[in-house]
Amino acid sequence: NAGVTQTPKFRILKIGQSMTLQCAQDMNHNYMYWYRQDPGMGLKLIYYSVGAGITDKGEVPNGYNVSRSTTEDFPLRLELAAPSQTSVYFCASSYSGINQPQHFGDGTRLSIL
Amino acid sequence: DAKTTQPNSMESNEEEPVHLPCNHSTISGTDYIHWYRQLPSQGPEYVIHGLTSNVNNRMASLAIAEDRKSSTLILHRATLRDAAVYYCILRDSSSYDKVIFGPGTSLSVIP
Image (tube, rainbow over all chains, first blue to last red; front, side):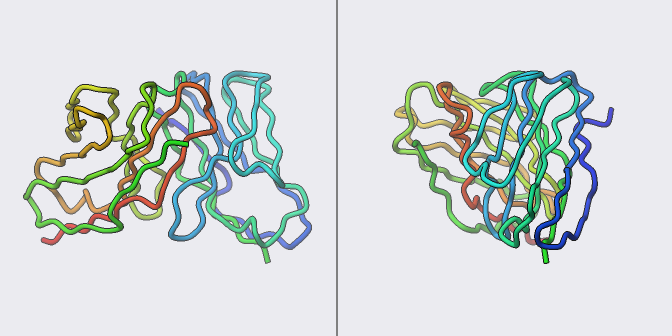
């Protein structure tokens, strides 16, 4: 059982480039989340989704976009990458909302130079 | 927004019990208390959660104060693998974007 799979694991971007961080889960979870974690800090919620076709902003959505066309996949797109977006990005999923544990991927370490 | 306060760091000897405290004095009646931990270079891992009553699972125990303004995660016998950052967070039923991870408590386990 793979759980939550994130690709790529590492990436270096130049300022102004765009990229998509991939997230897939095989647990048939309805809820999916994207977080970023800056060095020495806790996680901040970027976007979340409660089901296919439904997404909503979290605490720090600026500079990012998401889509949820299937239950399994929840890609995060960075448009016009900026140095402030250098971070570790974690995707998570849960069966439902607040009373269910979140399962996290291993993260994507992104550097923007 | 209800937030949590945790010590920045704690130490424990291997095979000793560990009590990790968390204060959440502004908790609302609908907030669930969740604990996660994060090993180095990994994503957070769910540990335990509760609403009002104490909870036990194979990983840990969660003791919730009667007024719910504080809670304690209890690791019964610390192992080296338990060295991690432990996050106490509140999950609000009214809004999913109020999941706030603070800096957590960095637990060191001494052999």
